[in-house]
Amino acid sequence: MKSSIVFVTVGTTKFDKLIKTILCDDILNELNKRGYNHLILQIGNTTIEPDCTPRCGFTAIEVFKLKPSLEQYMTSADLVISHAGAGSCLEALEAKKPLIVVINDLLMDNHQYELAEQLCKDNHLYQCTCDTLLELLKTMDLSKLQPFINNRSKEIAQIIDHILGYS
Image 1 (cartoon, one colour):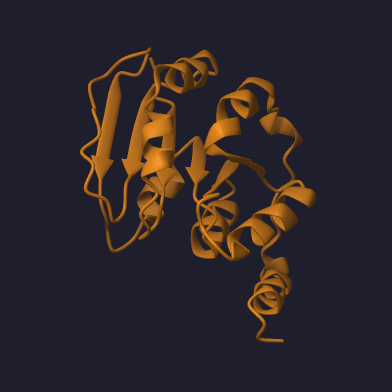
Image 2 (cartoon, helix red, strand yellow):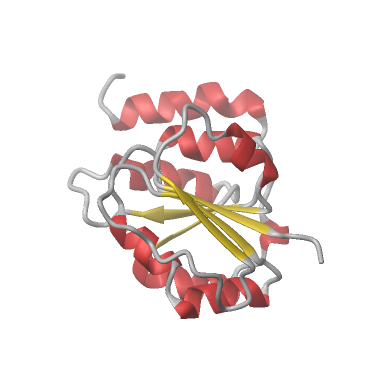
């Protein structure tokens, strides 16, 4: 059977709630119902040690903290679930991967939410919080996502600059 990979990234941040949410049996079961059976977690700056025991139809659950590049994981993934960092979002979209962005609702002054909201309005990705991820997984239709056109990167950068108050 072909391995169908979900790659989860929190970047260099600490987003323990996302890691714990992804590893819940309900989430793993829903992902497996959609055909995924291999999970790779990039867990960033955390002290938690996730349970990587294969379960809920997943034959492999791998974990690492940080790597110099995530390119190989992005390109091999069949689905990317990411925090809302601009770099992670744009890397997944430019790799033409279906993307779910999970907003860290614990952050103050959450400019990441505004970026994810715009990309979601443009139908490039789905967005949710940890609390709404399961419902999104049950209802999403990845075929409705629109490809991200690289020539919009400048526009996205301008949006980010505006959000951060640089323009």
